[in-house]
Length: 177
Image 1 (cartoon, rainbow, N blue to C red):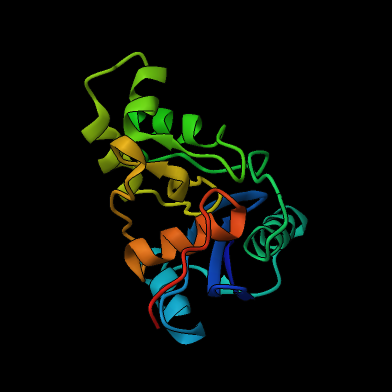
Image 2 (image 1 turned 135 degrees about the vertical axis):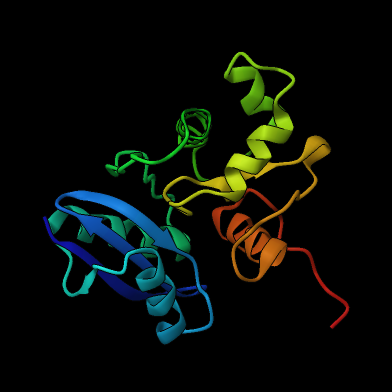
């Protein structure tokens, strides 16, 4: 069973994806360029070999590029390897995957959908440990009152907001600069 990885350009920077067979095992948001993204993926998947992705992984890459380019592309059908992911996290990710591009839920909304209304903070922690950012759209999960909440990817909340603007979930706010 070979583990592969690829690094690719998107509208927000260089992203990465790792796979095993026809299943995605991890993704990476931009982390400072191709070399940094590659190094981060190799740290997570030291046995990975960089190369052209098989059809299923290629479809995931194409979908990520399209979504970050402004297309209303849904990545919910991408097969993911949840082995090693805690049960609560997996369930929270499954709910997050139902959020369509251009829409958001709060951590509390996901907790309610899980039948665990007091677990909003645990949902936030799960989103912060998401091994599949973009495919599991943790950027579409906000804090109470529509506040940004956190975002563990490079660029933090600014990256989260940028992705939500691209998807049409947030208005592009003018800045003073």
